Image (cartoon, rainbow over all chains, first blue to last red; front, top):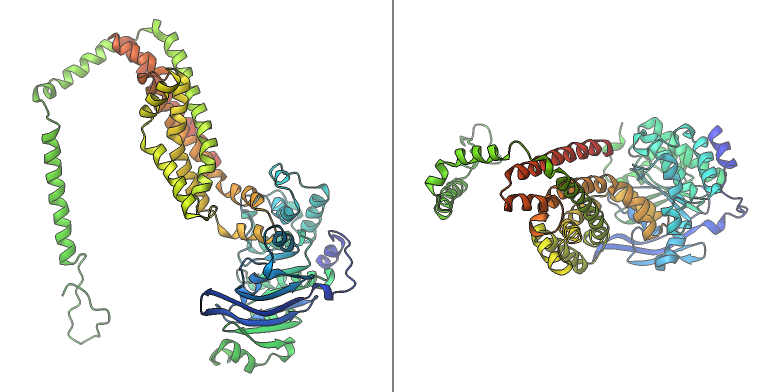
Length: 273
Length: 274
């Protein structure tokens, strides 16, 4: 793929990627209760490898989204540890938390672009964690950041739309902008929360290919929440199945059988085509 | 049998009937009609209409207009300088209100300021600004700073804080959560989130509110002169107290023209912004 090659060339900086293990995420006894006594995550412990794509599957409301959001602390866990790059993310506060967040890119189901800003400015929003507020106010983005943003847009085929407003783009284009914004952070981990659920099947595959390329060529581990079991099996190197706030399957896609799917989703009528 | 049964089986003999209101609701509606009628009659008795004055009102109106026409154009320089002062009062007052109201709007927006106590404080400021009429504000500032456009400008500004702050605060609360979440996830500081997450979403509402308020303020500052707070109202006050109706007519016609013009201009600009 041409996109793959271009993404490699447009690396934000040449950070050493020799050893992938520093980027692994170790989650220990993670528990989240939105209401006391009603855990959404029931003491989840899992280690996510520092490379490749990990897919989390499971029915709606089973805690997939909560798990992923605990990692970058959009959701505060009730108890447990999240060890990443030598820190426990679960305990960070203030500036430390922001510094940790900027190392973790996030891709959303509804893209979550700032609609009235241009495409290029949405990409540059990925650099906000590195900038003083008055530079943000004056739009003083560094030349390197701007150059990098244009390269990324070229790489995903949106180069000629840089100055157009984000809300005039199609779903697939917006999601590519969302992914580019995450890459602009120069992240050590990418979290994707249902990145394909609002897209048509063809575009979904293209978006998964883009994420797969990132994981492979840049050595950034990608964690994807996904509804579509087929896409998960096709692109992920490892599938984690969740049900009722706990992990019930963990293994390579080839090991995922119907009996596991029945355990994850319940029932079995839906499996018979 | 006014309520339709939720699951009436076919052939079970239950009459399926539907009416817009229950008997209780119907009774309540009649009560509202009766109370309204009583209120109208009562208030008519209170305002004590004097029939003689009512009968010759058309003649008085015609007479007044006759005395206004033709306009006394020798009065025009006074009217013009008053008009310029009025426009300056309205514009400066609006700008000052925007500056003062923005922090209050941030305090009032519950998604920005997560303290019910501060939200309430902000709302108190907004309500007190709005509940006092601009003429009363003007009287207050004339007493403090003496007569003139400064008192008028401050009156306009303080009166506008409530309006601008309330609408701005609501616009901030209606901002989409998604982009804010994305910028938070990117490690942006609260200030950066305000600038790149909230401001782009609130911007159209901000300018729309600013224009709308400026439009209102041109009208309000036109009458502030009646209490000595400068502007074209001073000219109107002078003309009417001297019973120079041909001068008063000129002032009223000028105010009318300016108000129509500002209305046209602001609605044009607003359609371009949004």
